[in-house]
Image (cartoon, rainbow, N blue to C red; front, side, top):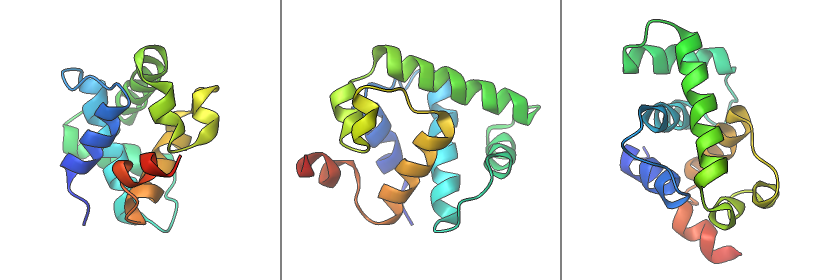
Length: 120
């Protein structure tokens, strides 16, 4: 089981802001996807799980929060660090779905952010 702290550390190393609720939703989404890995759950399943844990009224609120987190991370984040997970992220903004699945796969495989960043 990957602790939530490892997920938070990975996202914060990219420039995430821990004070913004949308990043908490993103951490929860990565955690939920990782818990279901190697299957790739549909995003609506992840939204529902995050909705319940974050006590949000709707899955749409979760979806919008994830979109905000990704837009903010792309605008203010460290793209070089993001590129250590997926090379294309240095030049092209990932969708929330792509980000969640790639992060979950790295964490599930035991290739946390520190190990991955040393590879490139």
